[in-house]
Structure formats: C-alpha cells, structure tokens
Image 1 (cartoon, protein in one colour):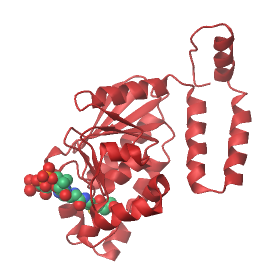
Image 2 (tube, rainbow, N blue to C red; image 1 turned 90 degrees about the vertical axis):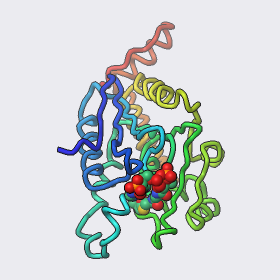
Image 3 (cartoon, rainbow, N blue to C red; image 1 turned 30 degrees about the vertical axis):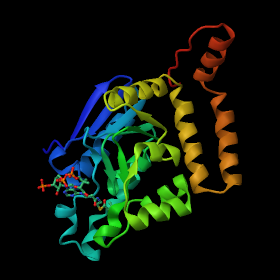
Image 4 (cartoon, rainbow, N blue to C red; image 1 turned 180 degrees about the horizontal axis):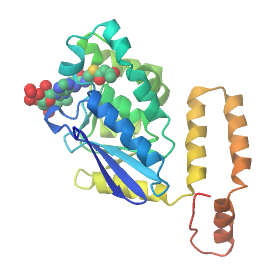
Length: 257
Ligand code: CAA
C-alpha cells in the first residue's frame, strides 16, 4: 500500500499529514483515497474529537498532480474518475477539521483547506487558485467556497490572476482564522485542535453543520436548523455537565453524550 498519508493519533486529536514532499504534496488518486479512508476512520472513532489536516513546512498541498492526473485527461476520463465523490466524502466528515497550512496551498490544495471547518496558517503560507495558468478553472469547489469566504470581487481577482495570497492577507480577507509563527505553526494548530476537542462533541458537530448552512441555504432555513439544533442540545448529558460546571465554578468534562 502506498503511504501517501500519515495518521498520527494524539487523543483526543489526530493529525492527518499528506506525505508526497517530492511533488509539494500534490493530490493523486492514492492521496485522495487515503485522505478519505483516514478521515472516515477517525470520524467513526469516539476518542478523536478534532482532526488536523496538514502537509509539511514547504507545502500544505500544491493541488492536483498535474503530471499524473492532467496530461492525458479528457472530459470523459475526468467524468469516469468521479473525483467529486471523494471531495463530497471529505465534506461530510462530522468531526471538526482544522487545516494547518504551511507553505503552498494551491489549486486543489487551497480547496482542500477550504473544505475544512477552520483554516490556520504559518506565516509562510501561500494560498492560491492558479488553475487559470493551466487553461482550466478550480474544479473542487474553489470558485464557490473562495467566493463565499472572501466575496465576489476578491475571489475573481485571485482566480483570474492566479496570484498567491500571503498568510497575512489570507487572515485579512477572512480565509485564515489565525497566522502562527513559522517555528511553531504545527504545535499552535494542534493546540487549537485540542481546545476544540475539549468542547462537547455533539454541540461542535451541530455548530459546524449550522455554520455550513449559512453558505448553503437561505437565512430562514439556516435559522430553522439552528433553532432545532439548539433545542436538541438541551437533551444531552453534555449540556447538563456544562451548565452544572458553570454554576458550581468547576471545569466541565464532556463525554459526547
Ligand atoms: N503537480 C505535479 N507536480 C508538482 C505540482 C503539482 N501540482 N506542484 C509541484 N510539483 C512538482 C514539480 O514539478 C517539481 O517536480 P520535479 O522536482 O520533478 O521538477 C517538484 O514538485 C517541486 O516543485 P518546484 O521545483 O516547482 O518547487 P517550488 O518550491 O519552486 O515551487 C510551486 C512550488 C509554487 C508549488 C510550483 O511547483 C507550482 O506552481 N506548482 C503547481 C501549482 C498548481 O498549478 N496547482 C494547481 C493544480 S490544478 C488543480 O489543483 C485543479 C483542482 O481544482 C483540483
């Protein structure tokens, strides 16, 4: 089996690292299948409450493997490939996903970061959708998610020029939540994941689902979902624990029940 994705469990978090440094962690079939398999396994594991997706210092991911995937590709081969189902599988992971980006997050790499719930960046990070330089456009959600994240005019400028966006700019335009020093970015991202992992998991899942709906539905439908999810959480043991811990001035310990 290829080992293009390395999973490290550090309960209650796990780190899923793309491992093709020789091609700046470009995505081929193996990486996509392993990413889906690894995140699905972790999603089913109650001991894991937040997943960090990352690459290495030089690159989070430089996008689709242009040499392996695109040189001979035709519309028919692309259709047969059914990449969509793999991206959709990642989208439906319920455990909060943190993208920890150092170096390049380009094309499918930027799209992979954007499929996560939170993006954090090393100060070395460079985001971009440079597909235009290949005669194509983003094909894994870039035109939709980038536009929803940063707005039409900035998204068009980034997509039409193919330029790279620095970590500081990514934070300024709402693409990255935090920028960490180059020396500590991964530790800082893991600390963030541990903070998320300490929270009640059922509430965390419903919160990210509700936030996604803000992108994907009307205000009325989103508010309706939020209200029902809010009421539903009053039936959980973790709500009793959180409220009791507040009232009795102690730290809450959440069980995901
Ligand atoms: N696919 C295949 N190989 C890639 C790659 C990619 N996306 N990105 C980098 N590599 C390879 C290079 O070809 C090079 O291989 P060799 O050593 O065999 O020459 C190796 O990785 C190192 O790359 P560089 O020498 O270019 O390293 P760099 O640090 O100077 O530059 C880079 C890095 C800016 C990422 C540059 O390699 C680059 O521009 N890569 C392409 C980025 C890109 O266009 N991504 C979009 C792909 S299309 C897509 O993703 C569609 C989609 O929506 C899913």
